[in-house]
Image: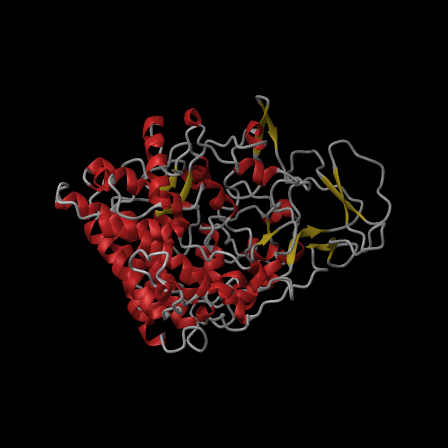
Amino acid sequence: MKQLILSAAVMSTLAISCKKMDLSPVATADKNAVFGSEKGLQLYATSFYNDLPAAGDVVRADNMSDYGARTDVPTFLTANGFTPLQGSGWSWTALRNINYFIENNNNPAVPEAIRTNYQATARFFRALFYFNKVVRFGDVPWYGKTIAVNDSVQLKKPRDPRSLVMDSVLSDLNYACENITTTDATRSMITKYIALAYKSRICLFEGTFRKYHAAGLANGLESTANTWLQQAADAAEEVMTEGGFSLNTAGGSEQSYRQLFISKQPIRNEIILSNIADATLNVLNDANWYWTSATYGSRLSFTRDFVNTYLNLDGTPFTNTPGYQTMLFQEEVKGRDKRLQQTIRMGDYKRVNAGVTEAAPPVFSYTYTGYQPIKWCLDDMFYDGGTRNDNSISLIRYAEVLLNYAEAKAELGTITNEDWSKTIGALRGRAGITGGLTSLPVTIDSYLQQNYFPAISDPVLLEIRRERGIELSWEGLRYNDLIRWKRGELLAKSWNGFYVPALNTPLDLNEDGKMDVLFYSGTAPAAIPGVSFVNVSPKLANGNANPQQLAAETSGEIRWLNNIERKWEDKKYLYPIPTNDLLINPALGQNPGWE
């Protein structure tokens, strides 16, 4: 159990119960011991939580995104590197466990209200399971009950249409939202409002997918897009009006955003569901190790193109600033949306080293672009090695619900100034932005449009997409957003970093009077204490192209791994059915383009 902190005795019992359920989900003599009491239902239901993302999954979830430069180009994004032979994800064990519970949760010894609550919880997890499968594969076979190992008809059946599967997902979600009665202040148990929050996420995905893929994968479903968008808006609105949540503002514009990602206990007014850490039970995560290691993680760093989308504090686009293209790092980060300083190393950011607080500028053994993230990292360097982090990792939070509501309403064409003010305006206000908080925008930001969403001419939608990218960065939602918006080609963008004015010139990135980094070509100059040297020669000593160069050789933006071709093809909006699974059941058929 990853999400719930349970006593050792309960965990032991659960492990034994789950093992029995997974290996032999058939009628047994002890079935009544599980389904004949509320405690038995509770123990079984906790096994479903293992299907939620673990803390480490969330920390790594944006490993493949348009705004993240990393150690290597994902195989999936290379021209010929990924085939169905490398396919994965066609696993159905979790579904069998859920369906077995749904089928057998009918013992009259347990009051009906209690059975209904746990039935609703199981159906929530089934909806989540199938949504993830549809996002990855499109059409999948719908199984509403457990299948016997000798039932060749069901095991060998073809995939069901997306419309049937997603209608079933929505049915499960609606049942969950209407019937879950569990209450929980720890933010680790599924409640009605968690189900509603996820419903807003899932329905927004499906509605926009059907709209923007109307001429392709969603052909024939575009007429139903608005139905899903309305469901998303309604679910989000119910959370907003009845859930009792609010944005965290306790730390002011300087701290309230980052507090959400480094707190040991989830900040309950905003975090809706969380992976809760507990050092006493050794329930920890490795966020610091992943984000501050030169070898363990992927050295994920923001690209400059994306950092350029952070607004000025007055609400105007940064890219309207004359000369922004050649502005130095230490200057370009000033006067910006306060979430920037709470997301990357900049300004007076500091870390603790053996009890001593030290300035912490970007370190080029951890970053390729200079925009080094801190979002999930604790400031004490003690946590940097191994699985030591005791900060809780959010899975869904109120800010996303606000964004889901705003986007669904904008896509429907029904968003109002009031809607804007309580969603995008509230998020920007928390980030210290002062302009454009109460009225719908009327001017298109040409930089955002040209570089990210050229087909969008509605300034409201453009700004909502900007806000979603910034607010939810590194939380694992970006890939799915690009898929549903049909903007997969952004994943093939080149990776750029901050502007370097000249070679062999040390730079003070945090303006503390100490030089931090120097870029050189050819032979390195004499060492300078405390300064990292970065080789940007076009060729390395072995004759190979240098993966880290400057745009104009002796100056310009940092370029990382542009020597490796990236290629986006529309077939990649779905993953292929793995070859091994297709061999077992040829009736599944392969996804378009992967044949």
